[in-house]
Length: 443
Image 1 (cartoon, rainbow, N blue to C red):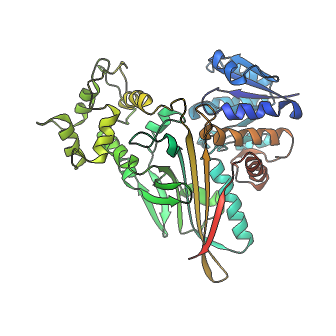
Image 2: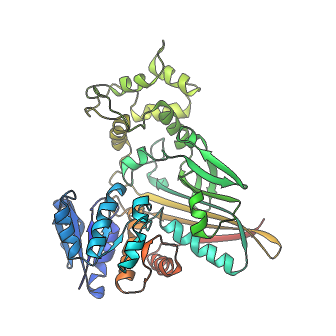
Image 3: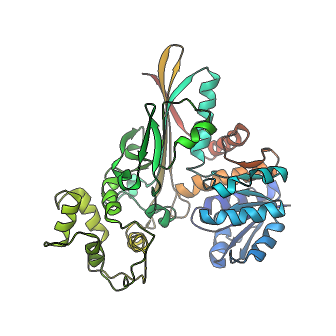
């Protein structure tokens, strides 16, 4: 029996665990779920056969290493900054390692040693990054096999609330790590547009949006995400003219979020010493220029809009202008904002989330200019089996199974851009109802 160790029992692993347990007997696998919250880990396993919950402190490296040593493959569902210590222990114990996070420089530096140990450390194997890579690479391969010259590739993904559960002015509720949402976009976005390099710093990122109309999904604002340029070589698109990877939000979200960014409320680098007991109105006032007038007027003046503007109304709805007291002591502005929004953007019992992914390829073939649009829309079942949990967790589950059964033989620190990896995962996702729709036309 082969053992799959999952470290971290957070909200993104529910569907992955269910899938692995559904097939544990036929694959002769045991699923070990390790988390500091034993009760939560046991609840995720539901007492099912071949599932085992263990309580651990991830800072106790000896305990973690001992657990890794008796496993065959490790899936780290911890925050991204904690993957490297886990990966180093996997390398020492010669165990495969999977994550859904971007390949860090420290992780990439282990490539030669991982190959030498006949291991695979598969990263970026979730939703975005993950399914975006796999689905995009499959289309790139198909077009290149036809002899097409791809000159533009735009790819956007959004983790959103489903339309039927969209009942707040932001059109957003948390379906993954709230901290990551608050801190999103804090590195400069870089991309290519018409052979011109574009650099969008954080202070302008959420005002640099593109409105997209997705068939069957609706209209969304897309903003550029991180470093799109670094994917030209892995994708085999070194000479492409336009290359943009981005994130979707419902229209209006980015315009209001830009105000909070401009105020400095998303800063996590310093602490407000007397934050506890301060009202949210006082918190907001502290970020605005001094001067006469009521708070909403000062805010609208800062944002250069009317007090009745929808951007201001969204901010007012959060409670940032209210007398509600802040309960966090010595907290950063970002932590204070997160604490408030976790109340406001919480998925309610009957809410459903939605994943929207969209690829647009433009290419030349047989003297014609063509466009291929590929879109994916996935809705969650409930607040536990969310679309986010499914699209992050299922690729990892399928990859783990294919590695242990020998279908994936690639080695080293890799992303799922190799056909041997992405083809069986995409087919497995299709069998589970996660399918892309494609439309092609001459332009």
